[in-house]
Image (tube, rainbow, N blue to C red; front, side, top):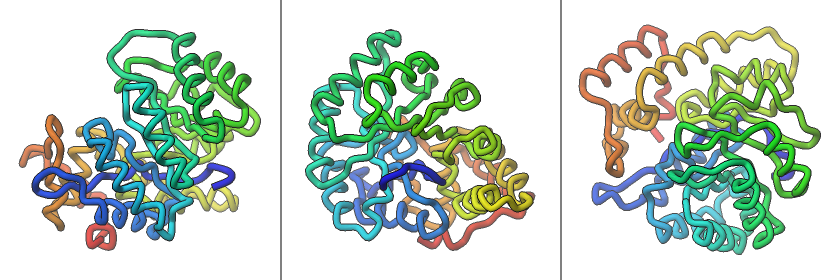
Amino acid sequence: MTKISGIFAATMSILNSDLSLNVEKTINHAENLIDQGCHGTAIFGSTGQSQLIPISEKIELLNKLSISKYKDKHLIGTGLNSLGETINFMKVANSLDFKNFLIMPPAYYKYGDIEVIEFYTKIIKSLPECKIILYNFEKLCGYKFSVSCIKELVKKFPEQIVGVKDSSYNLFENLNLKNFSIFPGSELKLLKGLELGCKGVITATCNVTAKMSRKVYEDFVSGKEQSDNKKLCEVRSTFDKYNLISGLHSFYSQQNEIYKNLLPPLKLLSKSDQKDLMNSLKELNFTNKSLLAA
């Protein structure tokens, strides 16, 4: 993956009944999304329950993913608060020839731009060959990247800091840097982002909208009139009424019970919310049986 651009699903992790990671099904799920239209996926992002999955299981998946036919199409999320564990995990990934990472600053503690720059500086000094997509999501980690912080990081590390996933939406309309990829975190921002010069999208709901999202992207690139964007936004807005991880697993579990398995404190939607979700999607004439059959 030389230039990072396009439609990326923040892919789901598939768990066994004992809540261990099902490596084979997780990889198959991610690569089915690529077959459906995604340019790639983000493995072990927040949608993939990364913060809750043991490092040993993540490493097991990386070993299997390293011989996958789509190896070069995956961003590797770290989902770790510890600087040392983040670096060690990245070194394992790097030894398997993974170089593209999605990294959020640590959660819980209060800090500012100076501390964030130091955090990424230490990572890059340990792995100068890495390529990092910054993960901007204040709701999850408590910190929101500023435009000035991004600019400083890119100035300091132009070869390593190559993009940002903007799920706080304070950057994609206000940041424009050469050789830097900006990805809004929602299909609702995909078309506008592309019009502003963004490179695509990295989003949870591409687990179900891969085909439509790719169509919107390709129609924009080719200059065609948009035919799918309205429905794409309606589907995303429907899922936005609920916790996205709960909603996606509830949606998939209608056809395959293994998707019912979630690591605490995560859980499926309530029965009433599941019913409302499925009815709302039905009203939009939205089904994707090829995805559900994966």
